[in-house]
Image 1 (cartoon, rainbow, N blue to C red):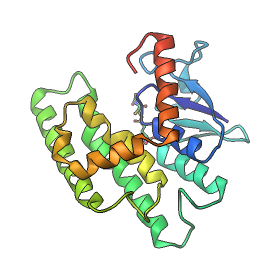
Image 2: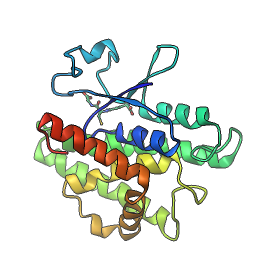
Image 3: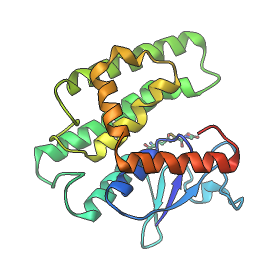
Length: 210
Ligand SMILES: N[C@@H](CCC(=O)N[C@@H](CS)C(=O)NCC(=O)O)C(=O)O
């Protein structure tokens, strides 16, 4: 399946999930500055919103929204390891985390920090909001190896991807020791090492910072 990905993007979470589940993806890197693919095709023809990630399904349709793509991959693999079965409270907890990470931590928290036009006064507000959310995540991780059900789920792949942006934006991550230990633990997984290597390889190919 073709998977539309970006260097340093939230699409990293989907790549981690696919590697964990041994589902092969054909990585199609999108240049987000020009919204084009390697062959010059306009990415809007794939996803009119112009956002990554997007997955091309076996019937040719395109599926966007990272949390839904992760859910699709985990359910289609079928073992229930990365997303517990329908009807369980653990499944709801995983989806609850994913919604919070996508809507609040990513969009409501980090997104303004990626925009050069964001005024400093709003940057300060965004940093404060991000710190409050990371502090809450830190409290949830005390004594926990993973976010839910004591095993690595799609919510962990997602949380790792977005929380790591804290290091990019100078957030004082040392204030969240349980979260930092968790990020180190997740970062040592084979799937995560492999996806980060793929990102570095692509960054080198196009002369960008990974
Ligand atoms: N709601 C989408 C948002 C995805 C999103 O914002 N992705 C970023 C990259 S991390 C993006 O494509 N930004 C480019 C843009 O908004 O123009 C999802 O969760 O998949």
